[in-house]
Each structure stands twice: as C-alpha cells, then as structure tokens.
Length: 440
Image (cartoon, rainbow, N blue to C red; front, side, top):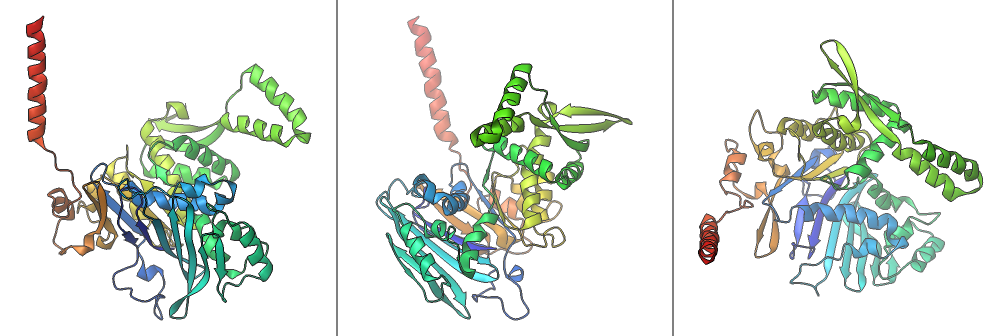
C-alpha cells in the first residue's frame, strides 16, 4: 500500500512535492488499535491541472522507480532515467522518498541522485513507534543496520554489485537468503507500469491477450466488463490468424530446429503471439455477428485496454497509475472505473489508483461526488516551476461545487488564455497578407 511519494528537483518540480495518500487524521506511524491501514489511507489520488503544468511528472517517477528496482543491474539507463533535474537546477541533486506498507511493515525508501549516479540510498522500517535503519548507502559504500535480517554472506554479495547507477534494492533481489525485509523490494512487483495514453497501447494489448490465453477467467471478466460499458459486445474470444504459406513454412522450419536452439524457440513463439487477435461477438435484433479487433470501435478497445489493468490490480492488489485517464472515454465510464477502487466488495485487497485527468466532471456533483475531497490534487505551474497542491489545503465546505469553483480559478491550476495577445497576432497576420497582395 502506497502511503506517499516526495520528489525534489525532478523535471518541472524544482522544489519538493509530496503526494500523500494518508488521511489527515492519521498522525502515527502505524494504525491505532482496532484500525487498519485501509482505514487511514485513500484508495485513489486524482491530479488535475492545465496542459503542460507537470501533472505527469508526479506519476512518472513511480513507474521509473519500479523499472530501476528490478533492472538497474542490467544497465545504467534505468536509474539514469530518474536523473532528470529542472533545467534551471541542473547541478542540484534529484531525490525521491517513498513510504509504503508491505507485509504490514511501514517502510521509507530514499533515493538521491546527481550527475555522477547514486548519492544516497536508504531504507528504514517502523519498529514499534520509530523508524530503524535497515541499510544506508553513500555513493558505493553501504552500511547495514542491526535489524536488516541479512546474513553476512548476503551483505557481501550486495556490496559486490554496487555501481554508480545500480541500486541496493536490485542487488538485494538476487541474494539467496534475503531475510524478511525483502518484502520492501517485492512490493514494487505489484506496481503496474504507467498507462500513458496510446503510447504503450500495443504492448498492453499483447499483455491482455497473454492473460486471456493463460487464464480463461480473463475472457469471462473481459466479456463482463464490456457488457457493463454497454458497447453491444456479448462475448470475446482469442483467435489466431491464418499465416501466409511462406510464414507457415518458416514457423514449421523453426519449430523443427527449436528443440536445440533456445533463440529460435523464442522467435517462433513471438511470431505466434503476433498472429493472435481478439474477436468480438455482437448481438442485434436477435441475430449475432463477429468482428475482428481491427474492425471493433476505438472506444471499445480503449475501454478494454484501460479497464483490464484496473481489474488486474483489483484482483491481486497493488498500485495502478494512469496518465490522462478518460482519454477517448465517456465521462460516465470514467466515473465507473474510478469508483471501483473505492468499493470494498470490488477492492478487498486495497488496490490503489493514481491518475491525472482533464475530466472535471470527476470533481463535480452530477449525479454525486465520485472522489473524496482528500483524494483531489492540483498542479499549478508558474515561471516553469510546478507546485502540487491538495484540495483540502483550501477552505472547502460541503455545499461547495468543487468542479465549478475549480473552473472559475478558485484553486489555481487552470489555463488563463490571453485573447488580447491573440488579437494582436491575428492583426499582424492580416496586415502581412494585405502587404503581400499589394506587392503583386
């Protein structure tokens, strides 16, 4: 369960910005007797703001951190991708501090970077009423705390992996006796990759087909969720294209040789994957017909490609991040999707949804408020620097129409068009065409 993330000097956030999913009344390091973590945290965080305000820069680090945790030993680029300082603060350090709960333990992980690599990496865990150090790394020197639970051999193995752009977490994930606090590393496995508009739609779609083939229940779930969306689909199935004869011959040859050649086996499987597709069955006036996914509406495919990762999170737990949720979707469907995470029956595992959006109806009252006010955040940008602001930092009354007040500029984080400048620009364009016609 994510508690908070603080970022400093990352892209447009030159100063510290903290996205906090802990409720305002939660002031202790652990829930009080009779309370749970769920009682004291929000299931969702919604970030609103003008175009180019920096909203995405709050969510992107979480996905990059996940990649770095499990891949930093394979190349410098995974940690280096996090070193992206504000353009007016290129020599200042970039830092990320994430607090989360894994196996009922409250962890705090700090990562500090500069142009040379990792400056500091530190992991702490709450023991009774205070944080204790599990490890602290300065450059490539690492010191383990007494409560790390790591045997001496494991510590030595981790130390051998220390490089300028590698993480202790990545090295810890390789040892044979990692101890109970490996949960702090494993937690990141349940952090789903950022859904970033249409940029990763193809890859996400292949993942969806893989899920459906591995577990038939996903086809049932997919059919169910498409019925909820009322798009006219009554059934979904995975089909395989008939490959051209030349391709079939190549596949046959590769399959014959693949027994002794791992690479050929992988290549053959990859080709097979790309021949698979989804087929949608529709019903109209008592008759049914099927559509290849290429012929299915874009709205149906967009809903499917966003909602399946959401169902995955709701099924297994974890954190889902979505940039520009609701792109190409009806506002009522977006409200439906967002509401799933706040429903204890649909979300018994406590999965969380973090998203950015321009859909202000999500903070409106029609037909009712879908977000709690503690879940709403705004990003305002002035002079190239972004600032993250919580709605509940403002004096908000129960009778307030948040959507209306936001659009009126009461909370900032809205575009302020300058029509006067546009008038001058258009006048200059008109004069240029007039002058041009006179010279002809």
